[in-house]
Amino acid sequence: MSTMEYEKNKVFKIVVLAGEILLSNGAEIFRVEDTMLRIANAYGIKDLESFVIANGIFVTAEGEEGLLKFKIKYIPTGTTNLEKIELVNHISREIELKHCEVDETNEKLIKILNKKTYSPKAQIAAYGLGSGSFCYFLGGDIKDTVISCLLGIILGIVMTTANTVKISKMLSNILGSAIMTILAIVVYNLGLGNHIDKIIIGSIIPLVPGVAFTNAVRDFMENAYISGTVRMLDSILIAFSIALGVGVVWSIMR
Amino acid sequence: MIILQLFSAFLGTIAFSILFNVRTRYFISCGITGTFGWFVYLLAYHLSSGKMISNFLAAVIVISLSRIFAVIKHCPITIFLIPGIFPLVPGAGIYYTAYELTQCNFDRALNYGIDTFQTAVAIALAISIVISLPSKVFKIVGDLMKNLKCYDRTY
Image 1 (cartoon, rainbow over the protein chains, first blue to last red):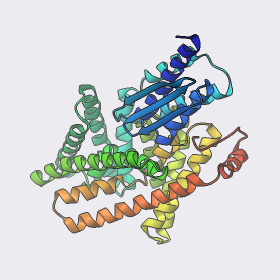
Image 2 (image 1 turned 120 degrees about the vertical axis):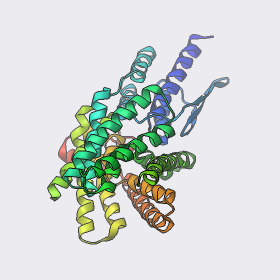
Image 3 (image 1 turned 90 degrees about the vertical axis):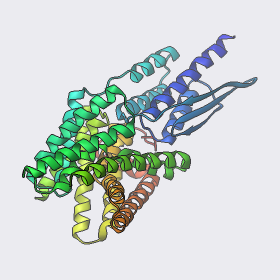
Image 4 (image 1 turned 60 degrees about the horizontal axis):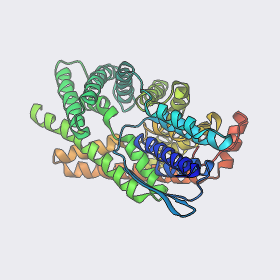
């Protein structure tokens, strides 16, 4: 293998890696395609063709003597991490502006891939903050807000432990919303809150599929219909699993 | 009253920025985006222009602000758009629809469903319109606030 070709293989790997990081952290389809093309062009692969859907990447690169490389990469839908999207985007632009060694870029990308999220404590606090404030502006009063905030913190603890045990997304949503409903009913019957429906909607709001929905709409707008459909179905499925958790408990305990 | 509501929208947006792992330095901008969106929604709703129009106008503001912040801070629009649009997104609506279906209240489910669909369409329209506006518009606004370099749709 000539050094030229060896170099191109390395570039190809980086291109796929960048696409993988973007897609698995919830980037839009056009951004994935665009960034891969950008990196490839900056390193001198001119004929890169990519086809990206919500859970897979297909890329081919053409060399002088026909097909150089072809890759299919399956990427399960993961959690949203906007920091990683931002950093990969930043790197792709940096490469365009000034020359960067291929190995250096590779190292940077691997660093991004292994980057840690906010600590569980911060996330749990965010669950509480989110629940409380959403309860308030969806129409709850101060009492409901405080209760919702506390329930949100409990939800945060449940969800972070569910993440470490690695149970399926649907099950953890059903479980989380069921626990929230039980607690909300108990608290309400103790006479602490005023509007039980606001407490429930506030405390489960961190589970609600807002991102999946926004991204689905954006994909439709960019003509990525397959991905848009997949993400829309994903958000409907999550909504139904939350509703199932609430509904079952509500029917039993009412 | 309304001040408290807006403040809770601000805090809520920041809470979701943490959950979506936005870096700390963008928190304030995310919060501002969410707050203004909710403010415009309340204002339009108060002037009784209906839920769909209110959502549309609010989404237009959220996306425009996201694009402006993207130019100023030189980073992808997604960072501000996803947390910022969270107060408007009909996540609660999808949930209510599904919930009423599990309780066999079909007419209420239909009501919520249509409501959710309307909101979704309004937000979708707003996104498609503002995203397809020429980036020059936002560049000019961004330049007014801070002098910076090139911009295109991935930002």
